[in-house]
Image (cartoon, rainbow, N blue to C red):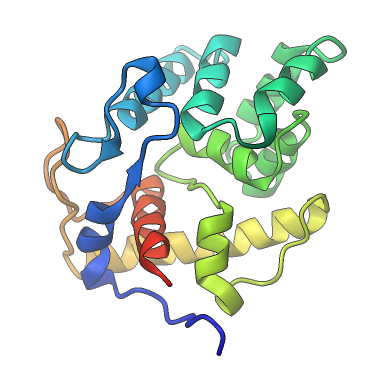
Length: 215
């Protein structure tokens, strides 16, 4: 039998956020695992760094995007592919196009996918850190758990990835509305007080925790 595609209930989102844990390269860079008990320290640090840069109408420096890649685990040597491409393409031009298109999800993702080495997972991670209230990561774990609830996405096909990601964002934004309307409080972590207003990134993190619990 296939995997169940029953979506999690909004009432269970605090539980699933509590199950989120990510610690790929964390020990090597002196960070504890990202989880609720530690306050998601590296995640929050990256969010704050991106926010500080964008508030100044500047572009995220190359070092910050490199840090994001390392935080994410550098699967399939994304950093190597990214680094090689910078010999041929100007980083400032590529990242500026992403930032300028953040108001339009399809264009923002298309711009992120134009960065060599960035597929749907890393492209959506970049958007997630640039604007966490609007965007969430769509990685293979969440895609597998959502199953038929999400249309089939063909990796490498920009049109397919963009359409699939837009559908995923609609699901995330629907959850954001339902969490607020149902007064489901997002647990405290770090300096962030409990709140019924979840960011899209926090919804995604809860979905990641849910996906990790699927068998």
